[in-house]
Length: 163
Image 1 (tube, rainbow, N blue to C red):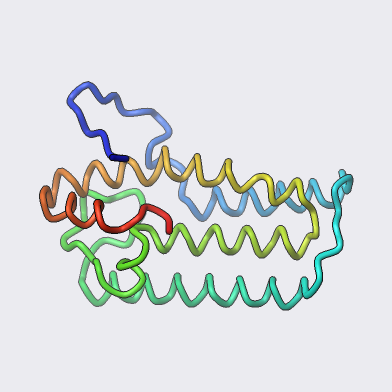
Image 2 (tube, rainbow, N blue to C red):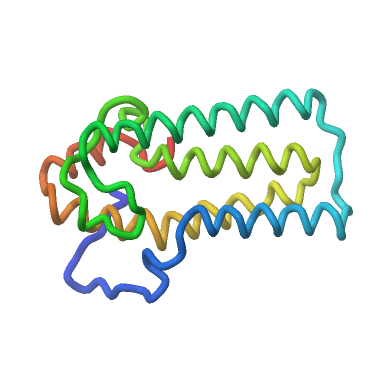
């Protein structure tokens, strides 16, 4: 089981502090810097522009669909205020991933790395997943578990965190 919400938990100071979009922006700039100033692992990627456009389109579609559902269900969108969540959204992309908005950010980063044709840029993805999981998703899950209890636990058991 991937959730541990025991009473021995200590909140880390970085939890829910840096907006996920800011983390994504930082990584976009870091990837560009690596590809521009340290082009050691540039590779030729067939259909690079098509793959980039496809991933960016899918990211946009996923983000807009996810945000629209939050608006439709009248629940909190702000990633640093999971305590304002009023309803658990489990339809649409939320049937396949508990975090489609963060998944859309990862698609942007993967598409950007492909566009840059740099393997080191692509290798930054595990850092993105680790940071977002530890400092954004886990605190959100803790709040959702506290707020929705058994309903959230059942949802979390049948729906993967990422994909």
